[in-house]
Length: 75
Image 1 (tube, one colour):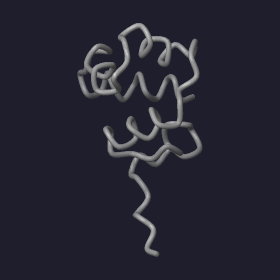
Image 2: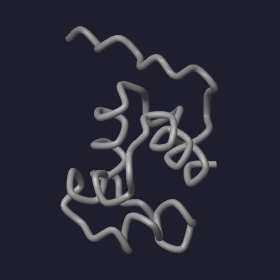
Image 3: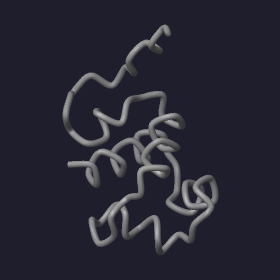
């Protein structure tokens, strides 16, 4: 699920893989492997992607279909 979601979000934003790879500080090949499911996506990369797209990690992982992120917890 996560692989399709990050590809769809990138395409919906009219971005190239190279642009996301630069943002994530990895190669385009590495990012392509994330989208193809050939490489596991590290937690820190999931956090960066969720922040970049203004969504939640749960959305990226397919645990919810709600794109809007959760409100910040108050401590």
